[in-house]
Each structure stands twice: as structure tokens, then as C-alpha cells.
Image 1: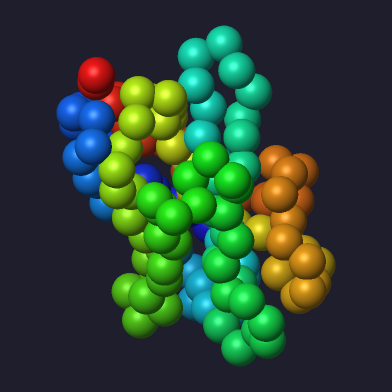
Image 2: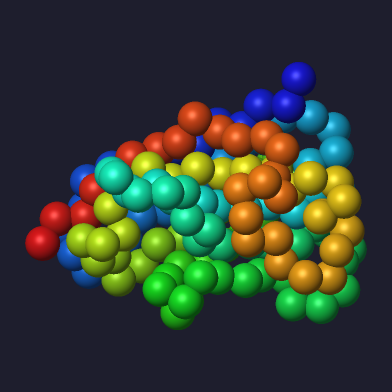
Length: 132
């Protein structure tokens, strides 16, 4: 069974930083693209960041406009872990953050999957709260 477990959330003041981690089970982590989403109270789940599977050509990472330049997604395939480094945090970044595994078909695509339905496994989320 594929399992994704997020960690690293917490309470931080505006302008601060957090690094989220997502540990994935399974032997074939490197074969899948991974993404981060977030969901704020009363809002729908929102795409945040994406990183391509190992070996894919082209740009390895994509971001939603609101976090570009502040957040960095990375992965360590030896540890089966994907990270989201979050800098210059703003109150509007407050949300539950979820990592997700892209479906195999979308993992092999050249375009960035930005929709929840493009991902097949999800973690339980980790709360990020940014105070002003």
C-alpha cells in the first residue's frame, strides 16, 4: 500500500520559514512525479508545487504564481521524500498542506498536472499557520 506522510507544519510568524517533508512508502518513488497542494478553511484544494519524476526531461519543478519565488520543492529519492521549503511566509499561506503522488500517466507527461484528479495518493496533511 502506498502511504504518504507529511510533517513539518506548525505556527510561524509572517516572514518566517518552514520546511515540509513528505515521506513515501514503496520501491518506486523515483518513478512518480509528486505535488504539493493546500487547502485553507472554506476554500477548495489548491495546487502549490510540482516536481517531475527522476529522469524526466525539461523543467523539473513548477509552482502556482502566489508562491513562486518563495517556495521550493525538491526530492531526495534515496530517502523517498519530497520537500517543500517555504520562505517569506504570509498569512495567506495558512492552510493544511498535502503531498500527493501523480498518477502514472501524468508522471510521464511533459506538462504539469495541476489538478487534484491528476494525483492518486494523498497524505493526511500538515497544518501551516502563519501569524501576522
